[in-house]
Image: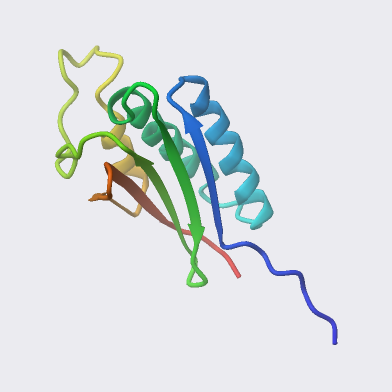
Length: 140
């Protein structure tokens, strides 16, 4: 019998509350996508990983805590990105407009996620929350 090695369907990593963690999360994601031979929508996935991990670092993870990144590919070709943090659950279901002014350098992250992901949302966990997004990709 000629068995194919099984590919992992879930990858997880934990990051400190540090801006350098965003680049580490992108590298982790890029490696997982390559291992799973997913080439389409890589830029969209990496953008969303950057935005969600940045939000968790700036707004979700209290000092001394961190965040978890989970990537899961389903056999039906749906890639799910989840960012877990232990911060307070904040109302993220509505997309807010950028604060201060149109020239502001921040405040657009969830608008970008909503624009490029097929679905996104937020859920509660104990403690904290999970913000997720999904992409239809070629897999299998």
